[in-house]
Amino acid sequence: MKDTLFVNIGRIVGILPQGAGRLCGKEMDRVQTLDNAWLMVRDGKIDSFGPMDSLGEIPSGIVMDDLKGKMLLPAFCDAHTHIVYAGDRQREFVDKINGLSYEEIAKRGGGILNSADLLHNTSEDELFAQASERLEEMISKGTLTMEIKSGYGLRTEDELKMLRVIKRLKKNYPVTIKSTFLGAHAVGREYTGRQDEYVDLVCNEMIPAVASENLADFVDVFCDEGFFTVEQTDRILRAGMQYGMRPKIHANELAVSGGVQVGVKYNAVSVDHLERTTDVEMEVLRNSDTMPLMLPGASFFLGMPYGRAKDYVRAGLPVALASDCNPGSSPSCDMRFVMALGCIKMRLTPEESFNACTINAAAAMGCADVVGSITVGKKAAFIVTKKVMELGFIPYFHHTPFIDKVIA
Image (cartoon, rainbow, N blue to C red; front, side):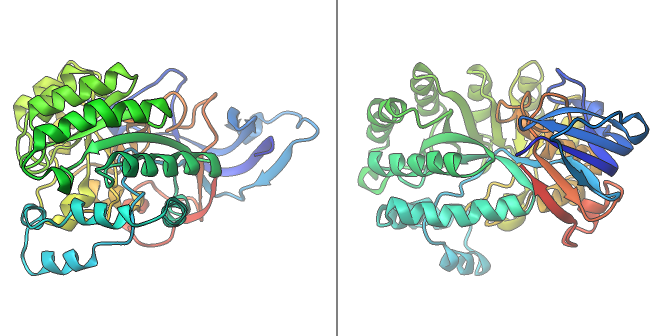
C-alpha cells in the first residue's frame, strides 16, 4: 500500500508496546485503546500514531484517509485452517444430523479419506481456484494472517500439490500466510492396516520432498485416539525438525492423547484443539513457550466439549483461538464468530477473546513480532469498523455486520 496517514480515527483498539509478545493470564483481560487519533503507515508498516491534537505538519506525498470517527483495530489472525480442499462433505453433514459421530464416520472410511479422494482427482489449478474463494471470504471477514495446512493428500504428490497451492496463495494475496505440512492427518487408503509403513512414508519420502521445495514452515500430526500414537508423532516431529520445520500438533480433540506432552517436548509453536485436557496438561504447558490453541468452531459443529479456556487464563496461561476451517468438522472461516464462541461458550471476556484471536493467535504462528496488534513496526493489517463501538459489540451482536473495510 502507499504511505498513508489515517486521521480522525474514533478509537484505535489493540495497542501494545514494541517487544510485547503473547499475553498470559490476567494480561489477556486488558486491551489498550486511544480515542480521536491518527496513524501513519509507511512501507506497509505502522510508522507512528497518536492523538489528533499531536499531529504535526503532514509530509508531502502522503495519502490521506479520513476515517470520520470510525474504529481501527488489528485484523484477526487465524492460526489453524484447512482451507485448501476439494469439494465438500455435505453428505456427512446429514450423517452427523442423524447421529453418527466424527469417529464413526472416519471408521466407515469417510471424513478425511473422502476429502483425500476428492483432492486426488482435482487439478492444482482448480484447487487453487477453490482455495482462493475461501481465502477471499476470510479477508472480507477481517482475517489477514492465517496458517493453512496440507493433510488432504495422504500421498506424496497430493500433499505437494496442496502445499504448492498454499505457496501460490502466498504470492497472490497481500496477507501473511504460514504453511503447515500435515501428511499425518490420517492414514492413506493404500496403507490401511499398515500404519507404521505410512509413518515411514511420511518421514522418509514426504518430508524430504516438501523440504526440497521449501513448502512448509511447520510440521503437524493428528496425535489422537484412532489416528497417530505418541510414539509415531514423536518420530514424525523429529523428522520434520531435521528439515527446519517447527512442530505444531493436533492434540486432545477426541481423547487425552499425550499430544500436549510430546508437543511441549519439542517446543511446538502451538498445541491445537484441547477439547479434552486435564490439569496435567495445563501444568505441562505452564513452563513452556508452546501456545495452547483452542478451536471452538469444531466444538460447535460436532457437539463436542469446549476447551477449558477460562481455566487456562485463571491459571496464568495464555490462550489462542482459531477457526479450524475445514469441510468436515468446522466449515466456517469467520473469526468474529470464533471470538463470540470464546465469550458465549468458553466464558472469556470480550477482551480475553479478542486477544486470543489477535496477538496470541499470531504467537501461535510464530509471528507476533509482525502482526496481531497496533504496534510501531508491525505490518499494517487492520479492520476499520462501521462506527465506534465497545469491544463487546463484536461478539455480542455476533452476526451484525461491523466491518467497513479491511486494510492490508
